[in-house]
Length: 328
Image (cartoon, rainbow, N blue to C red; front, side):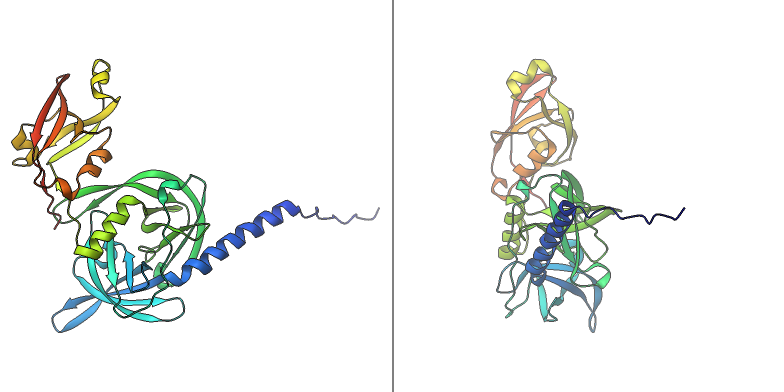
């Protein structure tokens, strides 16, 4: 009996078309966003000149030479460096401003004409959505990886020499990121930059600072002033359910419990105590730590504000004057 040759199954046209659509989407993003992403070589000033201090990626913000990257890419002692784009064009840049507490920094390449990226809005992202990462991993400029939004609303601790803060609404993606990807672009399928890649948290686990209203304001302050001013009340807090009997007064089922009060800080001087539960600041409801952090804007520095708290289950109002956070 002769052997019967196995006939391969017919190609599923639907699968082939889906793969082709996916490929076309990634290619389009790479071609659209790639010219806006630079490989960075940063230089540190030392006695007698400057020496190489690391590498990373950057994204062109404006046609007149401004770029955004991570604060940790340029560090605290870097004054400038060289940006190399995918077409081989090189530009010298200087550091305009850095903000370690958001892990963002702004660079400027004087006299350059850059292909500025189109910025999107990370608030519109959905879990499972296609995203494309473009950067300079391991010095391999113009590298493109693709994946999906794995999760939204993640938090990432950030520190400067004098202060700590949580970067909220961080984007989690499985698009491959490696050392050197930091500061590069995370783009959606329409070629809009929705995040600045910031950390490799594990295999298949990358994190990006979102492009949203908060980060746009930070970037604008860095371009204008070279730094970001923040208010500070001097408490460390954590999530806390509001007691059922107090929820009508609080207007929420969750709030922020004061875990620690900094000696001599604004909250300490106003009489805020550990175990107080913060309900609102200056009339704005506080349901989580991120809310409290988001309210600490420069406009509150030196301005008396009313803080509503629960103390032993009873509502209480205290007035305090936020100071400026010295991030160092």
